[in-house]
Length: 613
Image (cartoon, rainbow, N blue to C red; front, side):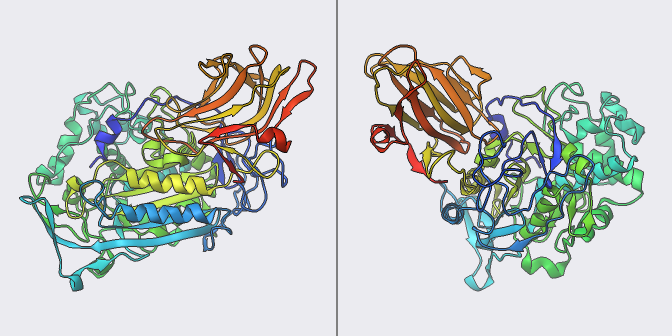
């Protein structure tokens, strides 16, 4: 079952980003690494926000290992926010916001309960259950209410509650495929028919393995395989399926891609997907509560899903609890490439840490650093807004929130699950909710995921470029904030430091000037780092999460200057920071310097605040 297709349809177009990928510090990063190689207090030129306690790069012992060299095998431990290099106030906000979605949001609760896990480096700084794992016995469609179980039969969430991961299962199938690519038994660019000759029916003879992994095969989103009573009938539907688009011509998320990949894996290995999951991933990593088809003994520890009945469900099954929710996966015996894996938050944290480590955890290695880099590489540059690695979605603000960067990887599941990995900060976030309990129509969108990701992103500190504080724009949506310098006689040029991470194509920070006392404003072109020109006077998107030196020539004497940051109503990035504001005369002498208390007091901050982090 696809994850919230309506949310995907509403996504704004995203700009495609390029760049070389390398394995670095147990993570996959582009260019310089925030905090990995900087000395305490260093900023521009080191490719770092800052290093030292609490800054990016701390907590994981990251080191530049380069391509083909072993990554550090960091393992997980529980610890404080400070030990993880996170700000506790914002980490606590993650729980507060999540609890709000247990209430009507806006009509019904988004989930009956959830388990939240957040960490950085090797430290799990937050692991919190909220709400109920099992609350309802049924759904009453006439009154649109849930039929609650007696209080003594309801089950509260615990840290170890196991969830039906739904489409997050696709990540496991993808990892298994990349393992086979690494071993040479599977060719990324090979046609699927090289492994499954029957697959070529309906005009699919040119579909490649890569197109399955990146959802560019042309398959439509799904087909009701469960209507066919036999496995042979289900396969016949798949073999005869006619692509909705020519292979490679469009992005269209489809469960059929990962079902096809499952069939390839089982063909080339001679093993079922459940055995591959156990032998190649969960057993080596010690993920003891992750599997297909959990045994009956697990049922008291599993979150219930939906009262599955027609017409909202394809099958009449009653309250689903301990069995896979997805109809097609259920009809395939609970073992499917697109859905069916059950797991808990801690096990997923192990998987997250393994990938951020470059494929290793403790003494176990399931992938090489190069293979992890491949999974986190955007293969969909032709389809801006649909950035995708091998199995992993990339740079998706609609559920990654402010954690989204061109290198942030993750996936969601229809039942209310999600996993987000941010290699640039070495942070990971797991939100597991039973949002289809008691019925799928009660939830919409991904607001709880976005809120949690925003809080974790804000919990990663950004150290000022100079001094104790810098100006911070905040992270509110549908907001415009301005930072205005005073009119200074003789000023000819602006210099300052700028840090930005905004939703690309939507939220921009602009440098503007006014010659009439602020009645009207015009854009001011500027350069960053002495080499990159911004003729429109604006920047947006992801800037590497590093400080950049800004230089701008004033358009005339005695003009006002301001920084203006405007956000739309949807998603936000980590925000904008400005520091070291100075106005220089024609000879390069400072006529205004915010470091001087008298000058700093003349700055008008509307919505901007002084921030040490």
